[in-house]
Amino acid sequence: MNASVLGRVTTLSFDIFGTVLDLTGSLVPPLTGFLAERGAKIDAQAFWAQWRARQRIEQYQDTIIMLGHSGYLETCRRALVYCLRDSSVAFTEPQVEDFMRVWQELSPFEDAVRGLKRLGGRYRLVALSNGEPWFLDHLIANRIGVPFDTRISVEAAGVFKPHPSVYRTAAGLLECEPHEIMMVAAHSFDIMGARACGFRGAFVNRYGLPYEETPLQPDLVVDDFDELAAKLLHPNG
Image (cartoon, rainbow, N blue to C red; front, side, top):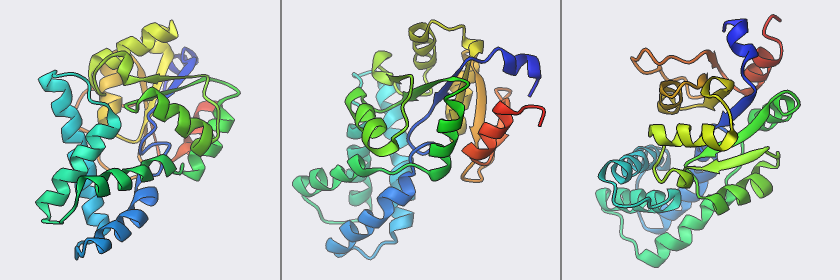
């Protein structure tokens, strides 16, 4: 990354779900039990992959159709119901509501906690997330355990990432020029959305996925938060 570009970055905005928080490690074990209790002979890992993909479709539909912002947990619930029906798994609505409480117990990646602690001394740390404000407050205080300087929910914009309104709203709330903010995410769509609005971007490729075919490329590509902190704190090291 160009040193002059890096030198203008004062603020790091972080995706939370899947970047800081380990969704697969947190949700697959209880999902295994939930499916077994329903008598479903389905691999929980494969089911989770379908659930996660469907959740993103639910978010995109919510934004595109513009019927009102449903909220992160509601799109998670809808996606779960869709996947259960698709796999012919019997369930009741109360069973789904009860299972959805596992989202309150998400755990962070260990490298994310280490990296956030290191970066907090040099940059302003911002949680910029699709999650509801109350949900983010709970996760930051009780699950991640590393304080952010501020948290911004997409509810402030009324749409899910990667809609441009999210990043423009965040820049306004932070009173920053877009180029002063670097979006950190493990999902290329988040980096694309941020870069389109003038943010810098750091792609944490912890899942070993290819980046999108787009001119909106990240400034940094790292494997985890340890490497991210090393490159940001010691760019010439």
